[in-house]
Image 1 (cartoon, rainbow over the protein chains, first blue to last red):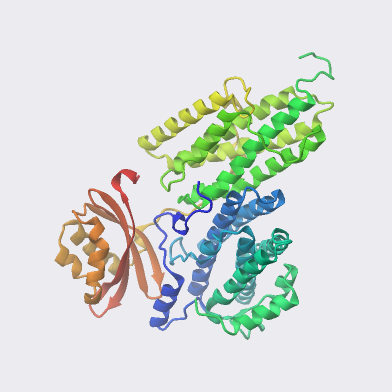
Image 2 (cartoon, helix red, strand yellow):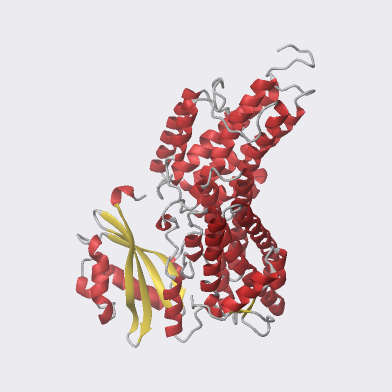
Length: 251
Length: 327
């Protein structure tokens, strides 16, 4: 098996429609719709849940590749990544269940492969920085918001299950923080590149600029500062992220 | 072996060597299952692998941490011999999207059942007074590998639906078992049979947590009646070779691009099938599987509502493969 594999080898059942996120966003804007689900209706929540479900699939696939791609990495790193595979498989199952709960079906919305592409970084340190700290950090923000919406609409099924997924994501970000430090110890250049990769992700994959600092009632997606602190983000990193959201690209 | 309660079968060094062999098998299995997840299209298999990577990692970890207690270096994996390496390479080799059956067979119908057999025999020969640390690990690994093998058998049965699939399964299992026999099993000295079916029975309720209830296959009834009617008329034109009729369903500005997209399937479309439907706001992306005598292609057609009804606004050929490679 190749190490790593090409992006386009990501295998899917025929029922999945794969498209670039940018194209989907543009097509929706052309129809006068928001580029990303705004969670204002049950259908919009369903679309968001579908997007998270495929994101969890890609996170499982990415963590699995990390287990395979780096046989020389420290054993404890491999163990953490193997654990993450299992966690992500439960998240997929959780979101498959939520999709059914919301009356949806697998393949109902297009899949983009943003997360998977980040998971194909050639350096293990870049992968944990980009995926575990960048994208799973973003997941903390998104899940926090979903829990808030579930509480508002009185849906304990979504609230409880997503809360457990959020707890796992915090653990994954923490793993990312640990391994970013350990894998780059004594190699400032490798660390710089890995952090740069993470910052690129923080800036670009920002849900069309809807992720902001502020309360759930005031901003579309609130940066989950408490969850991020639990996961090992420093105050300085959170401040930098807040600043980056003010100049984010639309994806 | 003597019946004395302090009689033993393996020396400390022998035990450490076997444990390095077990760790080799569990570690390789963990890595290959992890690597295969992204390469495997079918959700039941993908999620099966995802469930078991962590269990295999823990088995490898338990064995690796037991080693220093036996005067050996921690966390060392060692294949029994070169033939075992060859077996592992053969097991890892099916990586194409249409080789899921072979992947499941290698791990779930050969290696895991073999480990169940070897672990059970080892457990039966350990001394209850001075080998409990090894016995505890063997008991856990035995139980979990048995459960994994049973879960794999269920998924395999679900995916190998026809005679051709079942023949592939039997052929692959035969080849891999022959390679494993050449190695003498994971420890290099395992007596025949390398797989003891009597050890593999597991109650369905024990296996249930290893299997994810995956949603039913795509149902074309997901298309609304008016869209289904338009899509079916377009498909009929494609299948009957009526290019002008098919073009009528395409917005004029998209006709050239769509003709180019269909070009690799030129030479007569023999059948088409709707395999997916995704919503982009009010537009609908319909995914078709198109067969021609030489190739099978997948196209994604974006349908939009116009004053004349549903029309195709854009389309892409997303993949093709030779007929021989398709299931």
